[in-house]
Length: 370
Image (tube, rainbow, N blue to C red; front, side, top):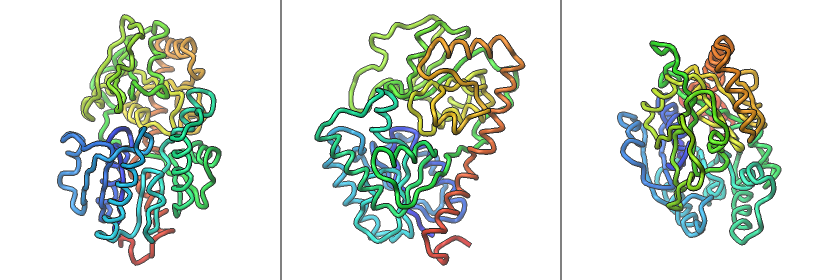
């Protein structure tokens, strides 16, 4: 079986693609991977070394959520159509909406990771303002969904957002994302540090990391992530007062992140908008207690395995963190249940199994691996 997978190198979709592609190749699937957004740095692509059966084609075409991306999207679609003709895949696994409308006869899955309209509604509390670009964006998302053989979302909440804001897919399903548990350390050699960590794009108001600066927390904080929007040079925290006990770190390598998670007692999932969220999974696999914003997607994914606080309420967040700091047994309880929950529900092997089962409904039996 041969699958063409698309990805972008800007955010969590790249980590998702790594898990997907690695798992498929290890199951005997031939994969052609095409990436957009930027040419990856060497450390971003080192995981590909030694993967037999992987054909990787990096590009720097803009992504569909970027302003003034129309020409790049048309050019990248034409490029993909050429790659499809050249490589003859059995299935397209597309991680952007735009390519659901490719001009080819190959079955295609469009994976809904996130979108601009649901982000805007969750963060701003209203529909985005009308503009020529927004009309274009809504059109290309709906077109991709309509023309896809199937649409898969990373949560039921996200699948519902696509139907609510664009169009209901003819065939829709959910596959939860997964991470490889062995990449993380749930058994540190010493007790966890009194440290709270959060990870995410600091320029993204949906991640809402800045709420950790609104109230003085009862333990040190480390905020990890890129503070510059890929389309600007601005600093995400310009004008926001710093606080004692708050440390900012740039994006970390996977090994560095796993070390932060191994040390940290608590992970704060502060997002106002998060269709899935890989960082909480990584923290859970590292046996961090998770405090999570009470938003529908986190309730779906982490109910019973995280301590929730009111969405975008820094006082409520402080209360939840204080509760864990003051009660070691409770903190250990939430750390253990987060670990078990992530290990059972959000591991990469389960994700690959789910995708292969879904592929079987779309691809002739003789194309599947033995």
